[in-house]
Figure 1 (cartoon, helix red, strand yellow):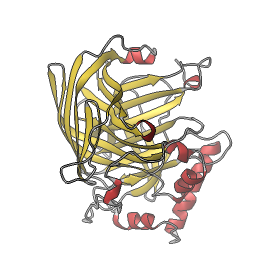
Figure 2 (tube, helix red, strand yellow):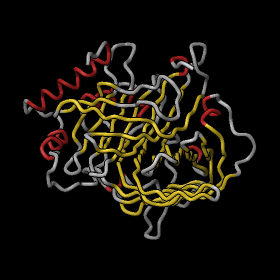
Figure 3 (spheres, one colour):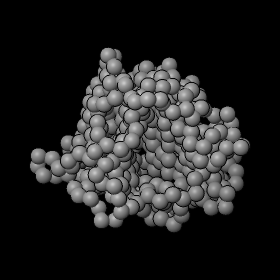
Figure 4 (tube, helix red, strand yellow):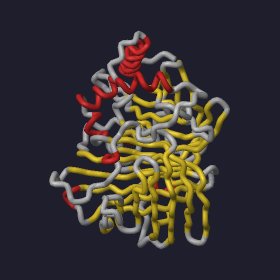
Length: 390
């Protein structure tokens, strides 16, 4: 693959880091550990904390003093079929209006139907029976920390709007009040060490600390691949969930930088292998941008990796699109084949050259294939609307 322009410079920076690793000049301790213990078929146990303290999991017990402080728990949840998926369910809390938190619930079906709940809800009591702040919840939705870095429980019981992917792409909004009863109870149990952004590649850490990509990321943030088991009920139809989840935890201040878009994918395979990454498009000013990810062999630690060919958002299709990704690491090039299964969209300012540069967002469940092994996983992509064809 021949990288060009700013993307090539970003990839070269990653390769220079790789050269230092191979030459035993290791600027980052976690990189050393990952390459030592991440051998396929090894017997190294999985440290599900990734070296992070339990305090990173507990929620704020009281309203933060800084009015810009935020915290969130989000999860992408999927089963093992293409019938239905949950491409983002989350609670977002901001200190300056602590009596309510915002929720977003996306449920997407293979036939293009979507069921959504959005908006503010009354804040739940954060303290558990042991006096520790375990619950982040609002209105009909809650996330409860059962055991740090190992077990969360998500519950939902509310009314959803019923509409379609075509409605979303056309920027139509649901009319009237939500009327479809939706309930979810899912246990999310970690299977892979957490990935903290900027922790695997020195160049990625530098970009987050020194450029506006860090403001977009929103402060300290980690994500963790997990197994998920529970039940989703839409109206009178019950869907057993026995699959996976990506859980995202963030506490920090998030300020808007220049919006350029992004691509983000992750999946956990039956064998315990997994992967994840986030990459931003090349910058117009030629500076390197954020490009970081990992491979996981089923034991040991995360293997640092980066993207050399990303499935950028170029058209709006709710399923059946090739969204394969090519990553590079110390072991060489890894191609992960992928096809979208179910999606939700947000079109904020139109599509096409005459549209605003406001974000167009796709959140999806995707089927991935790696070395003959297949699993469902998550994807999120965005792009300014004026760069997207109708």
